[in-house]
Image (cartoon, rainbow, N blue to C red; front, side, top):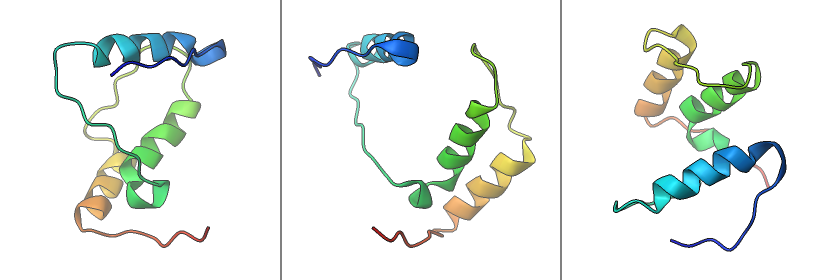
Length: 82
C-alpha cells in the first residue's frame, strides 16, 4: 500500500510510523467503522486525549475498557443519524 499523501503537523510522527508498519511484509486490512460500532476503540481514543504525548500502556484491568469490550462483544451498537 503506497500513499502519496503527506501528513504535517502534530500527527506527522504517527503517520510516518504507521506507514513504516504498513510497508512491512505483512497482510494488512484497514477498515473504518463509526464510533457507535466500536465503543472500545471510542473509549480508548477519548482516553488518549487526556494523556500526555508519549508511549502509554493501558492495563487489561481498566474498568471502563472492560465494560466497553463486553458491550461490543455482545453485538450491541447504537444507531447513527447522518
